[in-house]
Length: 136
Image (cartoon, rainbow, N blue to C red; front, top):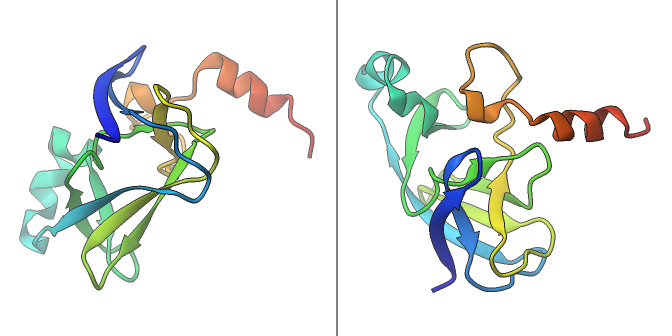
């Protein structure tokens, strides 16, 4: 076992490292289910919209990320990133810094902040302060 699900304070469930990962390590390869265009309106109007990923050459489509892929929480200071492999129809999550056993694995989903985003996406006060105190 390399990953496990547990409660992440203030976020609900999250994905945690069951072992140490080094920068550049593949954390998980997750199959993608490409969703049909006819379902886009239904998805946009449902809770599922918080768990799907943009898909396609121009991110014009949607995909569900299986495995733990849709459970990784967002962070403005992530320790992981994901890449899409359109040909193989999967997502690859990789460590972008060393991750210690027991640490939550988070990624930056790259959304712009706006009032329509879920509460868990908005950066915590200390994250905002860290960003504001950083130099140019």
